[in-house]
Image (cartoon, rainbow, N blue to C red; front, top):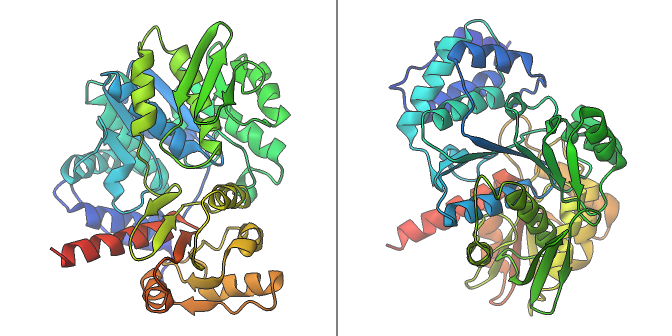
Length: 442
């Protein structure tokens, strides 16, 4: 009988600081790569053993179902352009693990990450840690050893019991709430909102950028004694023909450039980000001109990420029904003269049918790809879900994103559009293909 992940972890000798990062990641994935065990006690115990202090004078924690990554990127861009030293921790990554831990906008190199992993492993003793908990402690170690002005921590799953919540945030930011990870967080937006709201702290400010925030977020804020600012209630924005305006009380920013990220939903994300910047303005001053420059210059791979060529590629890590609806609304505003091909790969745990439904009117040809790992959904499962929605559909199934792309490239005509959707793994695989093609053309 094959050993389970936990058995493999127990049998394998841990790497050391000199071991390549790829070996460290393989070791972590073998024992706990897809394991989820929410709770803060383990992380807190190992953090105490490591002597972890606050990672920076100011900490912002970002939660939400959709919009977390965009919000982190916007905060990072604004504060970095203002001259502040910024650490950012995000997950998952698209191409390289190093993307998860950034200092001054640059991914941390392999060697420091390996050294941090070795310290976490030495300190944990017999305390079991999930992949994400292990990674979070390593990131906090790296931030704590670097002179930073502010650290931005993106929640991995939920909020209240997520590993990053061992750090008390100066400001908590909660982005849009949707249905995802229901097995862990609850089956309604109200239940999920309450879990996300657990990153708030007594006597400290919090911002919610969901324009229809679940009531549970306000209830949790009152119970915790947090000072919550709600979009549409305490602060708001207005969209003009080519610009937008933001206000909170007497603070008013007019004729702002739209973020260089496609979709009206990005204005909601940006509005929440500006509220966080305003709350920390005394500690981290930012000039209005800097905000304008940062909005115009923001870059974020994998979020309505367009690449021109023989075909136009539109890549998005959207993987839940709300994200699919947001994506299709944005796509509808950018019509294509040719046919639309979709390459979709998803995890088993996602709602495949609900994700595919909004895409039906916009896709002409479907290509489903197997994703790696025990949590990757077989392409045939996605095809069955599509058939339940549209019995006339004739999707193609492929063993990988690369195989799906090869067939699309062979059958599509110049001017067609190719969508790449469903998971960070799907978009990451496509980005690696692009990189390989660039390298081959050198």
